[in-house]
Length: 295
Image 1: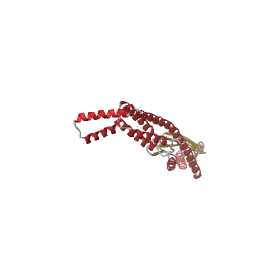
Image 2 (image 1 turned 120 degrees about the vertical axis):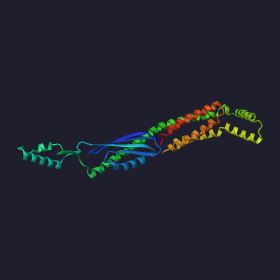
Image 3 (image 1 turned 180 degrees about the vertical axis):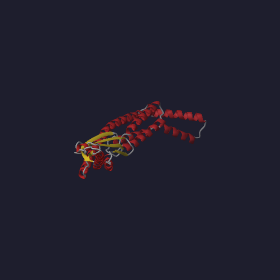
Image 4 (image 1 turned 90 degrees about the vertical axis):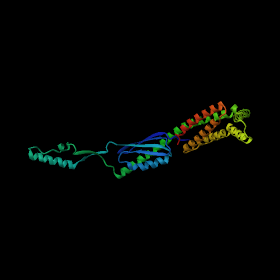
């Protein structure tokens, strides 16, 4: 199983007896699938086919599809512009009537600009159909190569994300084993906070004191945040082994990671836990940045 990046590039060439063409495909990250098509004049009929083919290979990304076409040697022909020739001959006759000039020769007439034109030979319906089919086949090759390029980049991203998850796991472990989380340390912190609360508030009724004590104890406990972070790590590893488009799922999971890291930092009751929480937020931010490129 492999994940795919939304970043990639590919190209494919093709030719018939009369034309040669070049497909170029580029893709970058986007929220959905956005296909932009650049075609030479006269080839607009290809656009719906291009969009349909791209939709079969890709599910997300901003994809630019460009096509260049050139006519090959032997596709041009010389054509006589009869209207221009009639006008030239009529002008020559007037000149002869007014002067003693000799009648114009054929080679002299065809040397006049516009009498002979070099034009592209028109394709027959069969030739156009064959070329269109061949161009679509080379587009399919370009799309397959683009998928391969995105998969190659995805493999690199997978390794980066696995490294981020390993760092997150180490930081979670550091918080779990912090001396500040031992029962004795927590009890001492609770006692100190309650002493300050009683000293600052004078006398408190037992109910209010119990309520404040519960709130202090709850803030001092980050066990639930650590459990959820562990669960998110396991879920991320599972997603990285799935096939298909997982980018949106990973993006949502990265937001959940960030939420737990923020809560852990707000509850931190010791310097080492605060440092681990801030490092955790930094790694998660790096992971979220990479996740944006995954299909």
